[in-house]
Image (cartoon, rainbow over all chains, first blue to last red; front, side, top):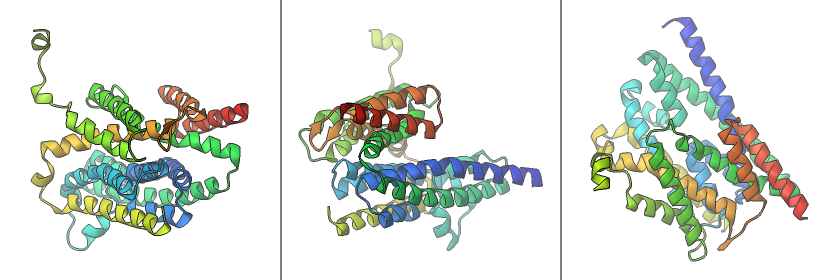
Length: 236
Length: 105
């Protein structure tokens, strides 16, 4: 592989690490707002290391949810990484003890970078460089966010209360764009999840409404692409 | 929630998420590439994130509460629609929330 290609891959990996680091700071702040101490926030980023799951766990705890509801939400979102791992096997060819190390870095960004690379050698480099860059920045910025949020007073707390849902919306937003696969269904699912969660809020323990919304939407099962009726059948 | 339960949640959740990653590199592809797994992976995130947005922005315990958070979220949505960078979205939402807090006294 040529040197310019390697440099370009490394440059992209570092740029992505810096961008994702901002989310790390937002996570640190959200963890503090949810009642986690600094060590717990740091442990989340070092050991869980998968952003959406981390946000979900502290989001449910912040809403007053139970430990099971919080961990359950994190695991539901973590299933993405299992599918990513399957796609990465031909590229990484993980064997023996190395598999246990490589697995920790299987996340959205490393998978996207590795699979977008033009060949296997660059794909491996992209996976490792992106993983290292994001791991360092994500953990460092988690500390910054958690310490920053802990130092806030009343008005700044109100600002943080508004920032946390905005951060969740930013995570959700790409799925609602028209360019995302099955965007119309994604939007229906999102609206359904939000409405069910709000309707259930007065009646169930905090946090349970989030899990219930997900289960309800999953059971409603909108996505049956192969069985979708044609326009003519719908009109009949 | 006690510190011990909180730690158990953090460490248990982290272990579970790691095992999900490890499973992808370890089990036969056919186990994972089932239609229902694909549906979960494709659509659970949207339902879960939207439910979390709703709960974070408009509830307090078991009550529906409308305050500066909703204004912040509206500002964030406009910023996202205009393709503002993540940091700008958060700063605008935070500023809106703080402003409402000050005005509401």
